[in-house]
Length: 427
Image (cartoon, rainbow, N blue to C red; front, side, top):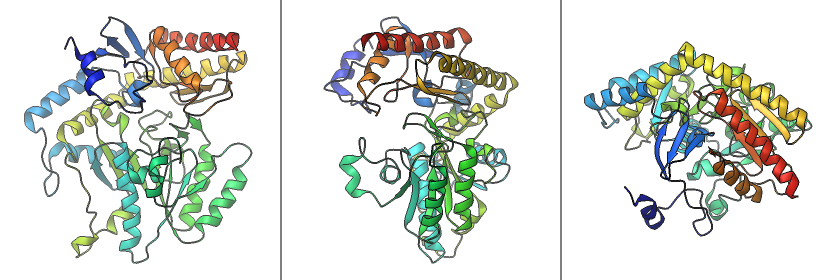
């Protein structure tokens, strides 16, 4: 593998990358705990958990052993008309963790497909009921994935402009802030009262790709209450927010009104293997029970219910519930809040916010979207100082593996301040 970096430049097409102008990729040859090790011998702190997935740190021995043990029994088997112990174990576990609110788990491959499944469930629910509904409500700034249904319910422009003529129509509510909440609730009520909406989809409490934008659980409760009043299905996209990222197992655990569907991925397997799950209530599931096969959810993937991925997920859940992990999550949440308070007092950033284990802060600058020039400067600055952190436009954020220690977190924090000071000096 000595020449793998040169081969990468010759053969690989990287995601979210303009190959003509992008910096060369970071050549990682080893990963362990909260660290990545590069081909040239550098150690990097994985400050964003490798695209928000790796919640326990890299190379966790318990997950590794579970994968190996499962491989010796069943690696993969078709899941249409077939079942196996590990998928059943995981489905039962997830239903129980929802306090039986959800009744069924549908397996797929990643977050985008989990959302696609959720949308298909909603559209077909109304079709099976004999009263099709075709409209969807979402929040401005949303990101739900890169497949066509997921793109349709996400923010238009930037990533999706070449494909927008192929999207289905979606109504968007403005992202809530302290000044517009009453106005948005009135708009939501007016739209949903039409009886034309199949579903309302949202990222609960935090919009990830939009810049870790946070909003209030009480407001989301009101949105869901309105939706329920008009029999509109609700979809919680917990792909990023699940597994204690927001301080609770699921962000929706902080809500009084629960969604009809919940989408899971990313941290589900501890960030080790791809797996998606779409959780559904019994009301939704029962609408697909019919003598006609065509009324079934005729959807699936080659790797649906993959046994090895399910084994990793079951073990990840075990680790999550350990007292040691719960203490780490509590410590991380505390450290993030303390640093947020410090940042607010120094006024080097604006809009400093924390939700659970996630801290985000915006750099003051004119361009604030995803393509902001300051994003590349920040990325390079942190990389040169031993931290892999991918800013979202002018927003720096930290959502590290739960195993990170205080020394490494303090290093990231100090880089936040020193980079902001450098920007201020060069203005």
